[in-house]
Length: 180
Image (cartoon, rainbow, N blue to C red; front, top):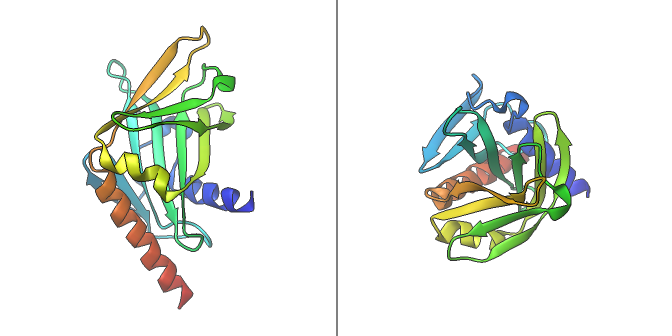
């Protein structure tokens, strides 16, 4: 549990959710890989990841962010963490399904908390769970609305592998530098 909390704290440093802002801070460097944005902060807290990768899904009509997915690699713990932020108004007890086109459904993505800005799915992710994300182009995050009807949020996986590889390397390099 302590490892999960430190991993989620690392994502929290890089993932401003209030207002679902996507504008990078002055102390943040960003790079785009297909549909994914790698964000690296220059001011790293102890135990935090220097970089994460994220994708926001916006409502076509309003432009408002309706889902945000973020992944980070915690080099000192040698593990990945994920955070998905979804809008309020779905059945939490039904859980969250991640469906990868041509790949397996991933069903063990529990909602960990809800705040005014949305509900959070936060978890440690084994590297092998990320293989379908790397090898396919499309996916979706599916929840049930309050009437029990599925609501799907598209997840574009183009650029995922490239962003993941560079983000992992940057976080490993940053951890080695801190260890000196």
